[in-house]
Every structure is written in structure tokens, then in C-alpha cells.
Image (cartoon, rainbow, N blue to C red):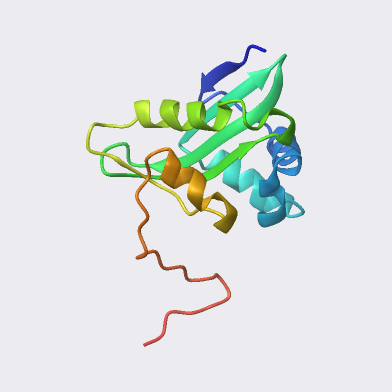
Length: 138
């Protein structure tokens, strides 16, 4: 099977949502909130996508300054195409777009921890999250 990979190829909100539903990531994203999904795809400044016969089958969606840090916010591959190297290739192509000192950072689903360690990521326990419904305390 041959796949086509594209850098910053326009992706519609419908394509993005359909891919998230077809992958395991749909369970952990607000796919029912169209405005949020539109903002997620529109405000990413680096997307690497995988296509098969004009169908979006994978995405690495990032926010980055290209020099110091790249937050890989979504890595999704349709279940039908998982375990065929697409996710790894999306990450390699993402890293190739970054400057030589730029770190690739992501938050993994618990079930994916072994995968990221296996492909070369270092675990960093210093991540902190402030949910939107929470406020910064004084």
C-alpha cells in the first residue's frame, strides 16, 4: 500500500473530525464541539498528514516556534492503517521541519507510553496541566 505525506496541506474540520473518530484519539478530543475543532486545525502552525487515495488517514498536528519547542498536540492514525509505520513517519517528517535545536514534546495517552519510549522519546515527569475550568491560585 502506498501513502502520500504532505506538509501543511489544508485539512477541513470534517476531515479532521472523521480521522479522530477513526482513530483512538476521538475518545479524548472534543469532537462534538465544532468551534473548538475548527480552532484546533486552523491555529496549528505545522501539520504533517498521511493520505491514501485522497483520504486523510493520519495527522501530526503541532504548535511550534520551529527553534526551541514543538508541541505535537495530536498524533492520529486511522485504526485501519495503524501498525504500518505511518505514525512514526509523521513524527520523522515533523521533526525534519524543525530547527536543529528544537525539541519535540508531546503528552502521551497512558497506553502509548511504551511506544514513545521504543521509538526514542525520553520520559519527562515535569509536565503540568491547568484545566480551563481551573484558575491560577494566588
